[in-house]
Image (cartoon, rainbow, N blue to C red):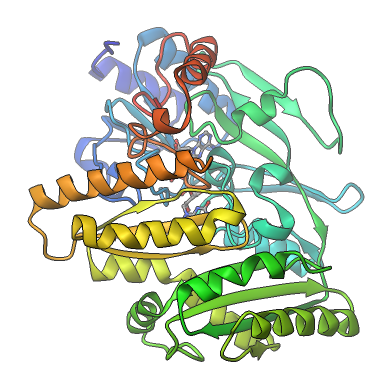
Length: 463
Ligand SMILES: Cc1cc2nc3c(=O)[nH]c(=O)nc-3n(C[C@H](O)[C@H](O)[C@H](O)COP(=O)(O)OP(=O)(O)OC[C@H]3O[C@@H](n4cnc5c(N)ncnc54)[C@H](O)[C@@H]3O)c2cc1C
């Protein structure tokens, strides 16, 4: 596909669509807009535009479609696979200024928001109203639009599901500028193909989402967390199936290795309540009634001790829980502070978690890379990090590609998937065919062609 290079005339036209200082060109564009949190894939857009309403997004896309200018859309740029990097230059639309909460509907238990609303702000705001938005990805500065378009998961997916499970309706602008609405405040919907579900997780390749209606729940009154040390990671992982078979499933069930905890302690300059054991499980439970919650966590504590846990530490106050979970939230940043890295965000069937982690560990010796892991033990979504450390660039490239290929091939063998929550973007697109067959990729390409025949939206991503 060949695109038109941006001219002075295009720039003037775009400035008419978005007047004020909202169209930035060349050196005016901060280099943060050239990358996401993966860091290594970079490309500057020719022009950066910050629309404030759907009609502006529509006019930009309509113009770009007619002129054949590539358009990439960006939320907060916290993605981990280069999804919001404008690989072909052209227009980068940042939705950071479309950040209004349009409505909290306490009758229907829904919220309608613009896509640039920051997750943390939204969680706080609904909780102040005794409501609850369960999706809880680690990076709280991401936008809700980015969360929807990557179908972000996070800590509480085990009990509450992922972002998709909370999206009721979307307003989206198609690549030719037409605006559609799909879904809405309805709780159920069997009206034809679900375009809403097709757009969720489409990583900005099919349409630009400009309004989102989300489902909310009543806020559980009580929360409690357990930190459970084990003498080795296998023992910790082996305890997981018994924990999720309990009467009440934990909201979150994370595993972590000591080396990762130590890195996070150093990064944050704060210590974890316990860090002398080789491996840990971190669990949280939500409920409304102290008596019931006590029964549930006692059952979990008993199960962990039966499975060989060294101890069970209870965090019941909000401050103690915050100390645990904020440290858990800092793991990735801490590892990035230690070394350049690449990640594998596979998801495997839950009964294969222990196998997959020991498979990943076995690759350390084989390919000579440091490999660390942590993740959502309860839902099988494992974050496996390959660290460059002091390896020369060419050796690092070779070793990491071999290691990633081996990890994804093994995931496929045990019927896992390439990405559990971060998406494919650019960085993982070579690995997608390893998990999906050619027919599935063909069907996906057909969908892309139907939405975006001119191939202007987020080119070079997913496949
Ligand atoms: C420290 C750290 C921890 C993280 N933890 C988690 C985690 O626990 N779970 C998880 O799932 N992810 C996690 N992530 C990854 C990241 O935060 C998520 O992928 C997030 O959903 C990206 O949101 P964003 O606003 O930054 O989107 P961006 O990075 O800006 O964009 C992501 C993709 O969505 C597209 N997009 C963004 N907005 C729109 C829109 N309105 N319409 C159409 N397309 C759009 C972009 O084109 C791009 O393809 C983590 C990242 C970091 C750095």
